[in-house]
Amino acid sequence: MTDINLQEVHDFMIEIARKVGERITSATPTTGAAGSKKNSVDLVTETDQAVEKIISTSLREKYPDFSFMGEETYKPKDKLTGAPTFILDPIDGTTNFVHRHPYVAISLGLAINLTPTIGIVYNPFTQTLYSAIKGHGAYLTQYLLTPQNSPQKLPLYPPTPLETLNTCLVAVEWGSDRSGNDFAVKSNTFAKLAEAKEKDGGMVHGLRSLGSAALNLCAVASGDIDLYWEAGCWAWDVCAGWVILSEAGGLMVDANPGNWSPRVDERRYLAVRGGEGQKELVEEFWGLVQGRFEVGI
Ligand code: LIP
Image 1 (cartoon, rainbow, N blue to C red):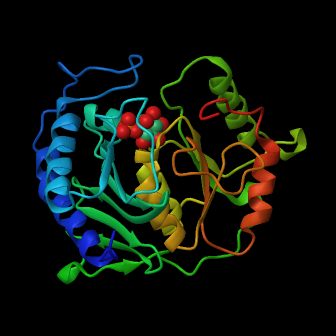
Image 2 (cartoon, protein in one colour; image 1 turned 90 degrees about the horizontal axis):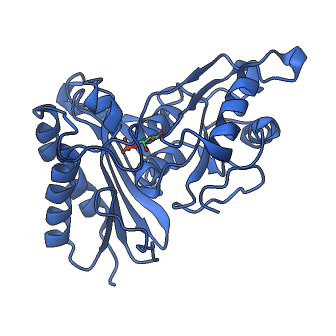
């Protein structure tokens, strides 16, 4: 495949996301015929499916030689290859969308050789766009707030050094698996992160569950969340946000202790914001993880 004009692809991805955003904000979010997937908290709506169809059709017309992976058409036999691949979550934060809680985003990434290379995360309710091209920085554009839609470089403020967990705000998610080993690892680790230092806990400033992996990663990239830890989400939840995180100086490692280089489809992630002391903070966090996740193994 000849050299890819990443800027052109990036601009086209934003154009599509901005166009289809209206489909999300004007929808009546009912699960209806779509309903749920593996259980009653793993929701999908007809809007998720329609938005994926619109975006994938536009991408395939413009870039017929690229591969595509989308949440709503994914099949377990589908495997990511090294080919340039668009990886899409049409509505990341579907549960929020169903409850009319406007914290949702179109998460559209491009991975090349399995490396997240372009990322756009767009919340159509707030018209807030996070975007990045590998090697070219990460940006926040607030179309409703900033004059001439001027992008702000991420992180939004000079990154302060990372200290110990008891100075951190941590994003976590319950996800849709609500029993078994992985649910126990999550529940026990959440408690350990919050527990007092004298009980060997992390005594973190707080745990936050925003409901969108992509927007969690953008909050870590922006610097207002220090860490985000989750297992069970998918490549389409994180590909775009991963580029934005990395270009803002952040680091992505495995949610299970010991793996510093997870794949985009690893399904276990720990993101830490930019700043001096990333390695030490990751190691402190890993020291508090209560067990090991089985997902993705
Ligand atoms: C969601 C993720 C979130 C996870 C939820 C769900 P969806 O994606 O963004 O991190 O905890 O279980 O997978 O389903 O809203 O596209």
